[in-house]
Image (cartoon, rainbow, N blue to C red; front, side, top):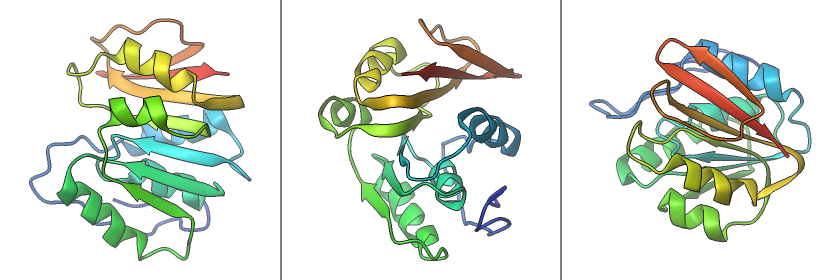
Length: 168
């Protein structure tokens, strides 16, 4: 996979073989960053990071600080390895359960969450995550088109994938 845009555009990143996550597609990544616009001086949280591609794209597009939260040790180690390809010193890597982490973490300007489809109580996650967004920030949740979310400000549909947005 390659980073779409920004200072690290076209940088290839390795993906863990036989992984069970769904990397966010290039068209979905473009939609996310076109919607949230400028990342300058923003803190960015990539929850359920998987490949870390969203967080790397955020760093490439000017985020001041990017945190990755991934429970799977192999996936997180791959994210750490990929980070070494980029001239960026403001990454944080956390091996945590996302539901527990979001209740206790600091606030962020932007939170992107891509949980495994049809497993998590997304509405509970959204309630907790919205409390951790700085004013003017965004929560973006990538989910299955079959999952039901409440209270979003915008939804973008890409086949079987939805991107739901909340602006705080």
